[in-house]
Amino acid sequence: MKLWRISGLASGYSLVELVILVAVIAIIASVSFPLYLSYTRAQETDGAARTVLVELNQARQIAITRGTSHSVESQTNPNNRIRYCSGTTNPCPSGNVVTGAGTDGSGWHKLENGSRIVQAPAITFNSLGAASTSGTLRVQNSSQTGCLDVVVSPSGRIRITAPASCP
Image (cartoon, rainbow, N blue to C red; front, top):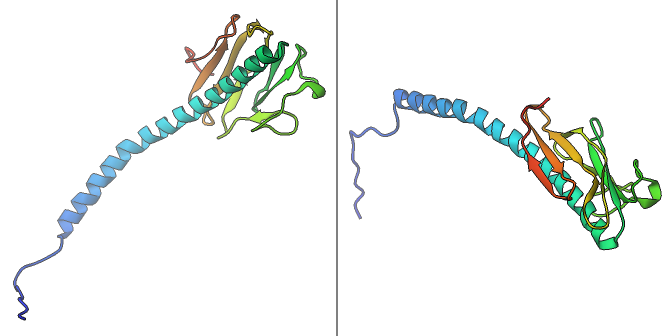
């Protein structure tokens, strides 16, 4: 068995090649990092709006299923939480609060990731699923750079919209 050895060939990278590679990586990172931050903030806002939408839809569904009115109560910053109860009284009386998965003992569901509820009218759904009191809840991301509205129409339809401007 012979071992062949090739001599005279240089291997590895030169210093210039490594500096160019590091410069290219730095340029790509400097362009993509702000885009990534913008994306994560938008996802944070969207997640908060969807959480509020789910809570409103659950309250509406329970009102239809049980054949009684259900009210949704929200608390703005610093609490940033939402809950619903049977009846039309707001704030919710302690005996009528609906508890379940994701709520604390008082029925509150807290928004995650530092998102905020900045506008929170009381919403009431009747036994047919229509909103006796309709309104717009506004959620905002933790950096206060974006917000979305969760709009409840009198018919009970709930949708997420982008407002013209955020506070």
